[in-house]
Length: 186
Image 1 (cartoon, one colour):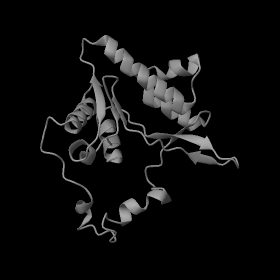
Image 2: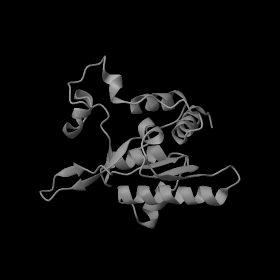
Image 3: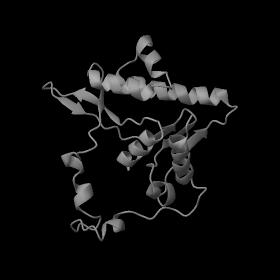
Image 4: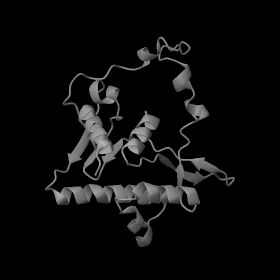
């Protein structure tokens, strides 16, 4: 899904970066830090936080609790607050907490290129996520279904619920908003 989103972004003149923050083990080895969080922030206009994963199961079947904000065109104060949340999170995860570092993270245009530069330089905690590989700890996702039986492509759909038919669900609206943003020419 992520690789397809990157392709759609490229085809429409946008950029999409996938990163993780790195930490250092006691022996000095670099370790990826995967944050177990449920946060979706889109275009400094939409922010959702809570217990729900951003997938069809959490947004349609499980009992979850999220709070979401969506800034309309004329709500500059809310949009500014959402942008500040983005900068705070990026500063924390890159380690760029000084004024100069935060200033670079505050940009909208060219942000992905800036984050790419930070990840390429290895001068911050930010690293590019290797999308072509799956870490060993997550290999089970592609090899075992929930009932413990080996993966079989004909049965793979059993591992996931179908998408909700409700066009007004939070997940559906969020995906529609992201798709609209990625395919816009602004």
